[in-house]
Image 1 (cartoon, helix red, strand yellow):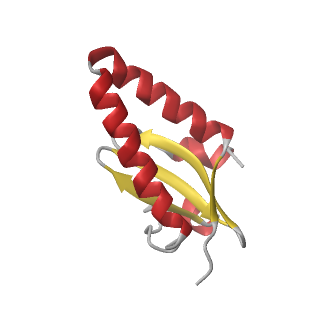
Image 2: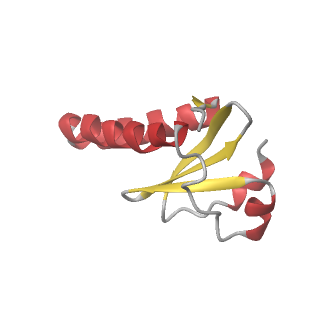
Image 3: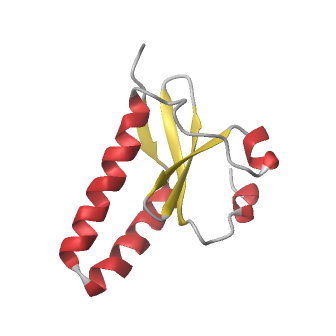
Length: 103
């Protein structure tokens, strides 16, 4: 099986930075550990891009989204022929219908 590149789109980069900064206010060590867990979990997509389930929202699933659950966060991604595009990383309690407006 060929490995794909894992690419964080700007929207996912912003999400990651915002969440990191939020956690870092209380505990820089916890923020660093959290970031490592995110990176490790999403790094696995390079070898196993189909490992994330389809979202429950049928419209997102129809658009090709998959997701990875990492602690309390959900990372939404789309598989491409040579890459995996991480599009958003949101807290699991957040509603994510807003993804339907993104590309």
